[in-house]
Image 1 (cartoon, rainbow, N blue to C red):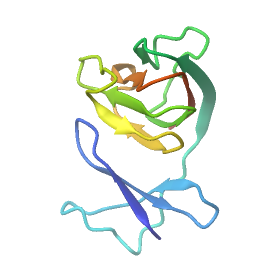
Image 2: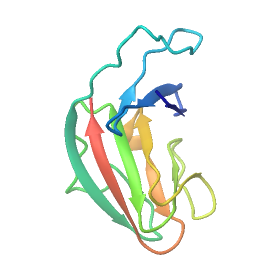
Image 3: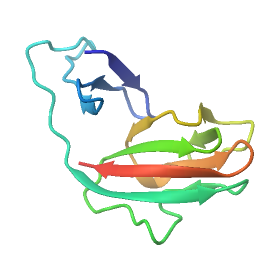
Length: 133
């Protein structure tokens, strides 16, 4: 199974791409090696929402119609319509500073979901967000 390593502020999370195209967490040992005999844990979807952003910084907690679901520990975020930048260190991103997330790419983020801040690099982006536990 191909894997994706996600390195949020507090550690590395490894996800594998399942045969159906979904991302599934992959069990790893203390050294970061994939445990081949362990089955990935199942995720439970808690909700979905969209954030429309232009040149203003937006966070998952900044849009009252989306509300981060109680118990959510993982968000899969996909920008649509424009490349984006994000930060999760308490500083707002700008159109030129922050981690780049290409239009159509997916970010699997596990950590303090309220800390994520996004901005479109240019134009208007819609951030599609699914929440999991």
